[in-house]
View 1 (cartoon, rainbow, N blue to C red):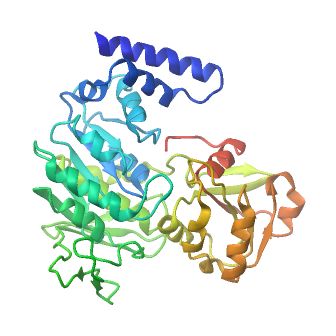
View 2 (view 1 turned 180 degrees about the horizontal axis):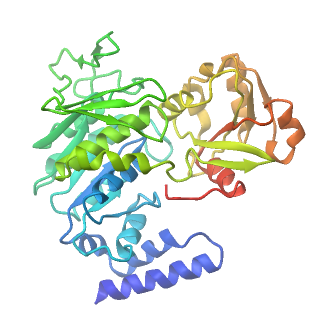
Length: 428
């Protein structure tokens, strides 16, 4: 009765917030539910198989892909809005889609800093652990601290904890290696700046120079585990192949661009397999996912067709650069430094903006001047414009009309572009 009353209050609060245009009412509804019923999460997941998807980058996309893969075999509930903290998770569980049964599996995106606190409310969850790198240091803290907390809580959790984890990320391996049942997947780790040191002893890790062999080890004996599943990546636009323990090969044909999304898809397929959904069933639905939370949508801004991409942290930006139209195509980069973006924009100096050489960059957003300085030192031709979408003539001098223009933004800048372009927020 208390949970039912709490969810009712949550719906009222959410509806009021939405009517006052203070947001979509989703997260505030979850906060009200938790305030009225502090054990709401444990009650809402009772009787369900729970999956938590966590990482620094790609967790929203992996969650969406995993939900699509499992839905091929039966109903599933998920926090498709991308609200990945306790209030958002509770809100999603408290408002399941019509027709989803009470025992349907829950595929939940979990913020990496909140994941440890969520485990106590569940029984025998499956964890999907993809990567750890620096992200919003003013809120999240150092990578090593997150990995230590993961490892400590995983080791202390009783009740059949299982995981699907990236064997190529040393921080993830160190944290997950205390879990008794881990399915190791090799999906690569292209960003290694945050895992140069052994998380076990602090020595410099030894890495293979062979790009097709991501092996790593340390003098202390800590080393990359042997993966059961192997992703064979392909060039942009080609189909990657996931190789299973029995040698079976599955082509991952996606609408989502880039090697990072191939890795996300591989993690989703393996997790679905652990849950009992054969890859022959789970792989085909991945093709239906074309956009996640507005990412990769094409909208109209200033009379131009603009494809929207999201950049959050150095590792994510490095992956995103490979998704841009080839040089010399120009690109708009919008940088804000609000709470959701991370208030400290010093991470700009860790992003390899040198990769944008040979193209014209339009620097915009509230911290456009910080970006302009970074581009200057990177040797990248750029123009600083407060609002390029308000001056179509200025944009026309840089970007050839008639072609889709790429625009990349930090979280709040991206959301503003999505809103102004009338894009569909399909969760994320």
